[in-house]
Amino acid sequence: VEINPLVITGKKEIIAADAKIVIDDAALFRHENLKQQQIDHSLHPLEREAEEAGLSLVLLNGEGDVGIICGGAGLGMATMDIIAYYGGNTANFLDTGGGISTDKMAKALEIVLQVPQINGVLINVFGGINNCFNVARGIAKVIDDPQKELPAIPIVVKMQGHFQEEGWALLEQYPGLTVIKEGCLDDAVKFLLASI
Image (cartoon, rainbow, N blue to C red; front, side):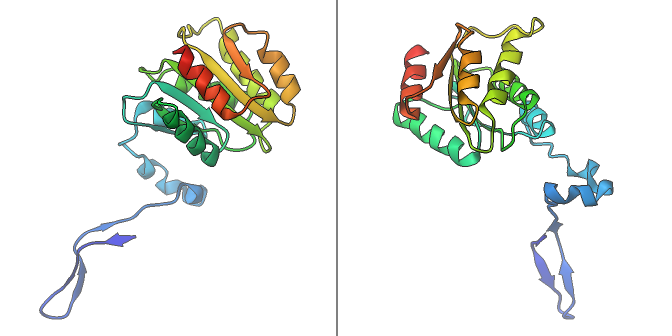
């Protein structure tokens, strides 16, 4: 709760002249009556779509051309830093969070592919909490969907962790994808930037 300004009258009365209340989304399940009031009208339609799917998306300055999907906020920030270090410019920040499902990964890729100015996508997942095979199946689901016309841009996948071999084997069936298996994030970023 923010009260600003707080007025003390000449009669020593205290008046909240203006106030704002922000409700934590994590508490909304306890307050069904407030859900409709909680809509943030400042969100871009893609950000709202991501939020409804349980994903965290932030569209950046509008000048970036690299779309990113990462399995964790820290990994996402590190990915953005390395892209900038090698001269790239990130278009968005999308954090899948932990325990990603096939459908959630597919939705993440569908959303990032709608960012108008992107010329390439980097998917960076460490399979500690996330299952690399689920990540791969989500990516494959989008590519295999006959209803979707995918942009002709490079997609680089850097994922390591549990079920990585199964995930790599699945993604290697798609010639349009590049899977960075043994290299580091620098290798994935340099490859993507050289491809766009």
